[in-house]
Image 1 (tube, rainbow, N blue to C red):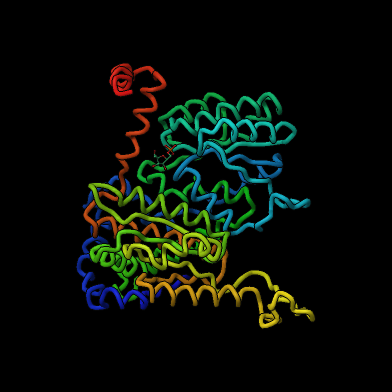
Image 2: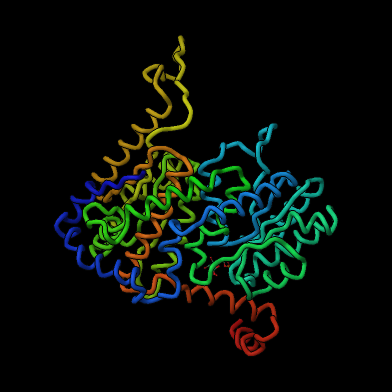
Length: 445
Ligand SMILES: O=P(O)(O)OC[C@H]1O[C@](O)(CO)[C@@H](O)[C@@H]1O
């Protein structure tokens, strides 16, 4: 189970002020529970973990087995909430060099449909030429250009290489129950499909088949992931006292920091496997809160790597930032620093120490330095990287995001701003139906 520590924000904001959010947080929680707030048609994530059935998990695991048995490589085609959650969990739990290992225990997982790079897609299709590959096509709207374009290429290649019949077996769609081109194609081709519930938005969908299917294909235990999230649902429940509720405290603290001029939150890890957890978190908070000309800007760094690049800015740049560190208490492997007689590198003071001890001292030293430098610091401690703990972490962030968005006074469940670039792109590409926009945009060039 994760824990949250906000002690190192108290030099910048007061404990009393944070605790004074109790009533506001309670009201926000009630809006979520009763569905009386903005965006109340997108609350399906709120009690999702505890409502996932054994049968649903068995169906997902069975489909995952079909892909595992029939594919050396599986492409997860999706963008934003339709890919980041799966990638976050898979990378957090995988061996760092999994794709280079000779003996594979699961298909190599590759991501596509999250960019429009011709080189990326060319190189991917080249790599796949002699591979038995399958595709999980994930899109809630079923019409997202990046994903649809990648899927068009992958579908054709899969059918050409493996034949229509096998392609039908190794292509799975995760999409809306009725609407969208991905649904139409899946029904016409007879693919196995999973539904993304109407009331779960993309960035809150990691615990639907959007995340669960790829995670199961990659060989991870989705039952444990869901169990961790379900336990966290209880820990962050609206019946839990404010002072005991980590989602409530996190939401209150970050809002109090924001109201005191801390406009940027940097999510920090000291473990490179968590890079994509940060990417997932950035979408969750960025799309939920960045609107009506307000919202904390969610940023992220991987330490100690980025201490050698962004560390300078964080230590001495504009004091408009705060950090939230995800700290992993126990690593999965043991490696000691060897002693060296010549000691030419001067590192014998570390001989016999675990590498993780060095990392932990870097973490502690960084916290103290950054707090001294004027950066408030929160810490989320994960006992270790496991399905259970990651499931809990994801739900904790979701719950806190719902509360935090309501504290900020925005609708945390829409994303109208993402349409602006799409409209311009379609106008520039002369998409049918965009004739007026095409004329207007050309006049601006
Ligand atoms: O699942 P879809 O509909 O393809 O959308 C993918 C992503 O694109 C967005 O709609 C933004 O355009 C995100 O909110 C969403 O997670």
